[in-house]
Amino acid sequence: MNLATVEIEKVAAILKLLGDKTRLTMVKMLATNDYCVCEFVEIFKVSQPAISQHVRKLKDLGIVTETRKGQWIIYSLNTDSDYYPLITDLLRHLPNQDYKLQELEEQGLRISCD
Amino acid sequence: MNLATVEIEKVAAILKLLGDKTRLTMVKMLATNDYCVCEFVEIFKVSQPAISQHVRKLKDLGIVTETRKGQWIIYSLNTDSDYYPLITDLLRHLPNQDYKLQELEEQGLRISCD
DNA sequence: AATATATATAAGCAAACTATTATATAAGTG
DNA sequence: CACTTATATAATAGTTTGCTTATATATATT
Image (tube, rainbow over all chains, first blue to last red; front, side):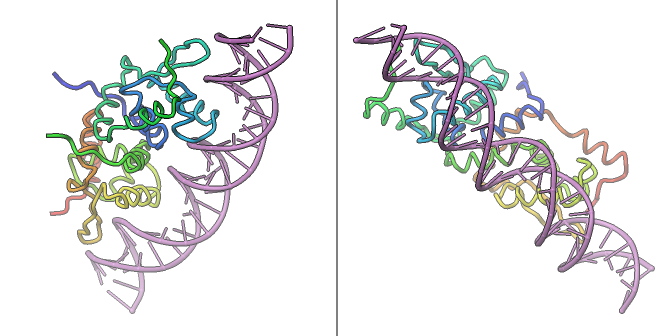
């Protein structure tokens, strides 16, 4: 069976979005865990609006989805996206970022929404 | 055996470069054939300096290499690059662009350097 | 040597990008 | 209801991008 390809314009749009260190790291992290905005703010040391703008761009292209849990909005990688196969292929080439989650937990900043 | 990963900053830099429709198409085309600047000018319908600037960026990151053949400078995909495995993985998701080469040939604009 | 062709570089400009601060909205808590 | 927390949106400023035109450089041809 052949791999489904994606129009070149769309791939260019995806890569442009992922061609930003912050967003690329976010997506790599979301491949293994869900995160809320305030966690990303801690991790990336930028303002909350900056993070909101990054995740909105990812959401606009359907790369991530959001679900509200109380006061938090939890972001997840959208495994149903047409771009998901491309994205996972990409992420394989990136080093694991789990240490960031560990740091959050050590600082007691991980949001536990159960 | 594990896949060799690439630093996240470097991957972001690669994706930023490939997040441009013109450059992404160029790289896809270079995966199967070599091209010179003047051919890209015909294909992409932009100015010659615009093409030169695109290929220079690709060359600066080591994605492509150049070899002079008489008056032409031929660009090739650099299969020795650390980024080559990532790039080929990416390109698999893009539709074949061979029709562009066919169009060049039909118009008699393909440079044959032997 | 003069001219033509292929490519590169420089300068300039409009559009896009990413951050910031200020403010609005939505949910949780006393 | 007042107050806090989490997130989004708006306005704005500095930077980067991708084109253009003009010009320089390198090779080929006559």
